[in-house]
Length: 174
Length: 372
Image 1 (cartoon, each protein chain N blue to C red):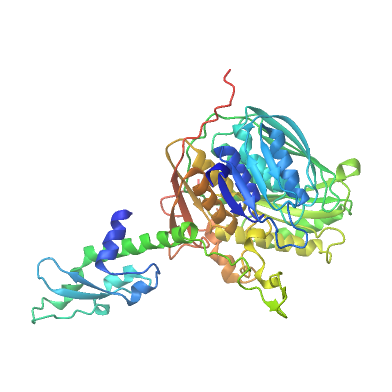
Image 2 (image 1 turned 90 degrees about the vertical axis):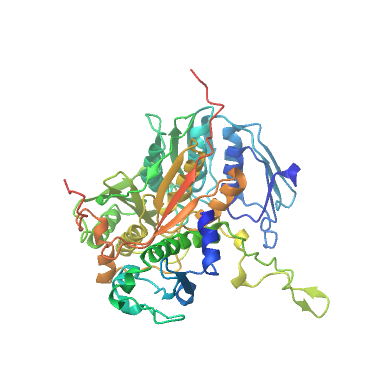
């Protein structure tokens, strides 16, 4: 993982956010031609991307050194593959950051204390700022919003979790 | 700092801290426990949990200051044996049992704990749920055998309680590393619809409504109705449902819902309860993974304590409780997990993103286990 991080930082100065990849442009040196290609990485579907040569923009840097445009998309395949890999790797550090990163320090309320008449301090924090540190110790997972399980599409989204759903080819119901 | 071991603030995640402290042998000090609350300090249920830990260990030192806002805990050795404990009815037995399940395998002598109190309430995982999910999970890590059991002797609903649960667990020297990466498909759904001090018909009404939701997916559903009477029915009326989906590979995803305790808010119709509980199960299946959200931290703990080998587990999205637990594991055991997000494939209909958790165990050995 260390290696990947250094590589990523070296090639494109990328911040932790996943979506910022899309705006970043990477200059890639192709092996034989010492020519710079500019690759715009699309947000999601990379496999589709590989099959569509049109979505690439090839900028000629110095001269019209162009090979046949039809095969041009094959040029950076290795590079593209490594980018896909990098992007997948990136999702993990994001979660890691969320878990192990610096915990946002919840203010202890002291800085927010308002003075009343220059004599008294309001020591009770407002209701909305209930202290996370003093919250109920409970292992239940209540997400902020539940899916609407009355909708047919939601029901469909988990259909393959059951033995009655579709099976992978390499598996057998028996 | 060093003389006090680890320091934390606030009463949240107290169980995690005490359990990890007991396992790692590191002292822990918790400050500012509800220091800004109208009634500051440790609550009765927390004191009850600390007393339970004291009962199963030898030589534990606990200091609480006068206002109860500072707690110092120096763990002793896990002893086990036969223990009886009156769990404070502010929280259900599940609250206490969750902590105990994490420790039980590392005792000197096998634990047989009789816990009395509230068996089912809407806040905590109920004993029925832990029985259906935590026990099979323990087996995955090599903690199995005849002695492993959670038995509901008497049921006691919140707020009155009066229930009784017996938890027994064999001891192990080491835990085996696990590879829980392939959940498999759900082959059947089981459940328990319980009712005490209400009409036994309530349970049947729950079963019918829950079936109406999940029958679309799978025909193999069986929901037991459990109606306890007389002395076994506790002090308060109530009903509820626990649903468990079992996959082919022997993993369990669960959901549960319990009726509102008497005198605490509007009553819930059994039909609504059944339907909502079934939807909670669908939500849990949507999250997916090999371990359901309630038991995530238990699985991660045992992965951490495993032998020095790679353990893997596929989980659903991490719950806030689990995220905090991972931080605590880092504090106590210096173990950081590798986390990979596994989005579902495009043509797959298997719910949301999953997380693959990987770690190398610390090679924890139960040194106090008696070798015969």
